Length: 114
Image (tube, rainbow, N blue to C red):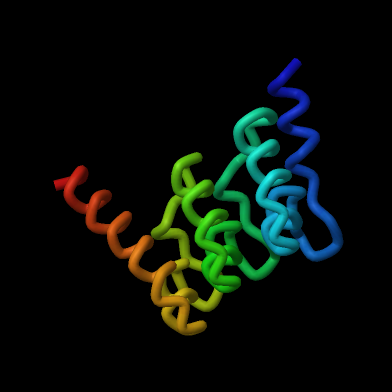
């Protein structure tokens, strides 16, 4: 039942956005948390441009959403169609705090993988 519910929340709108991506675009932390923690949606779904929820949160400089997404398994190394990661996006938009969070996360991933 829950798997079927999660699948229904993976449907996309005309821009290729899932409900999670829409929640992140609109800075709805509580809705994003509900979708990730309760429904179990994919934190790595991307829109038509290849932008992930993590990249969108990084673009907006939304630390709470970035941390939530990372905690729920968002992959920081995903690249959009232009070849940018969430770290690249945070740097491009001048969000130094987000960049620092993503850099630490990247170091941990590299360390865990050898």
